Image 1 (cartoon, helix red, strand yellow):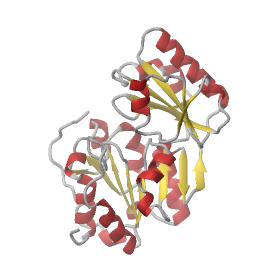
Image 2: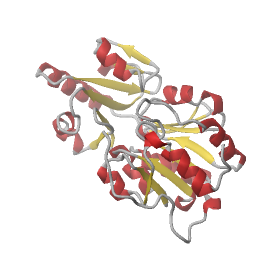
Image 3: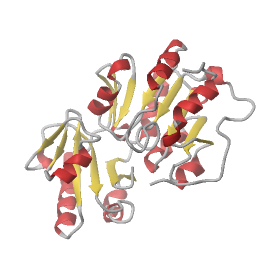
Length: 287
């Protein structure tokens, strides 16, 4: 869902040190990718220039690790992926951190989705494991939505009984998730993260899991400070990640709460806002 906002500065004010940035982290959908899910022109050249400067570029997404790794296959060597909204962080195929759900909670969530669907809500659950995603609903319309974000996906009879470490349960609602599915998960919100991650998506994770927590662990491991970190986001699942960086940017199309939380505003995802801002702030040569 696009939003419009009053102009704010794209570049931080005096006193910042662009040369000190060592880590650039960006959400994917609604942020780096345009509304047609396409990466910006010049992305690979920009990533090459960042690598030459010793700046690590990290996608941070609700998308599955396998999906992200395939999207960045050309440049994946050494890249860190913050996948599944921070519940699974991987570098060069090696897990850096994860935050699996209790199987009993997964079973409760799947049961809740079944009851909501039986009562007439047009939704389905994606049980997100480390190896694959699992769904019970198999109609083409639902699978078309799921397969945009989950390269590895299996249709199973019982998604609550899969043999995998489940790190997230994502719910796709063909209506407005913030108005229908999210309120129906109020019982889980008392003990877990229930976050609206898109117009049609709600993600349920452990209370300790979010993109920001994953980013802070990565910063500690790499010895990188918030002052050396640049972050871009557009939706509610990006809020904690923005808090972990001094150079935090909301996209011009971002949710109003994201704009309030970020320090700066970048051009929209359809205007190559991430690349334009990186290039300007870091003074990169034109592609």
